[in-house]
Image (cartoon, rainbow, N blue to C red; front, side, top):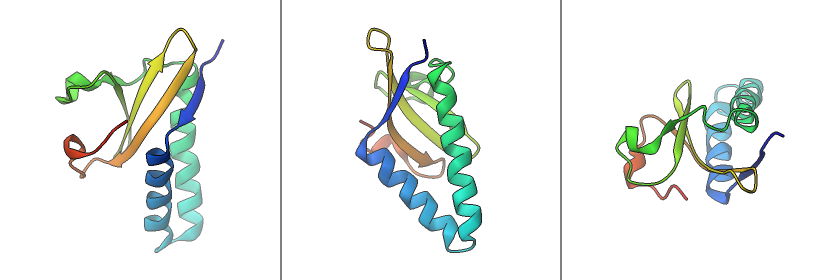
Length: 102
């Protein structure tokens, strides 16, 4: 049974920021790219361990990171409830170690 994916408020804000940034140059491209990101994230429903452990990115938290092009998707899995919590979606150039991830 696939896992359900939930986005925390910070993740929604991150996606809106990405959309706004791209839309400055091309509104249609922004919508396409947002769908591309959401499609990549949706793969976690069937493959919750697709990303690498945060510890491999030198983050001292129990989480995972899915890399989609230039973006890092920080998430947690819960086996018992079959859920995936998306904490943040950040551009790779951002110092994610100083950001609140969850």
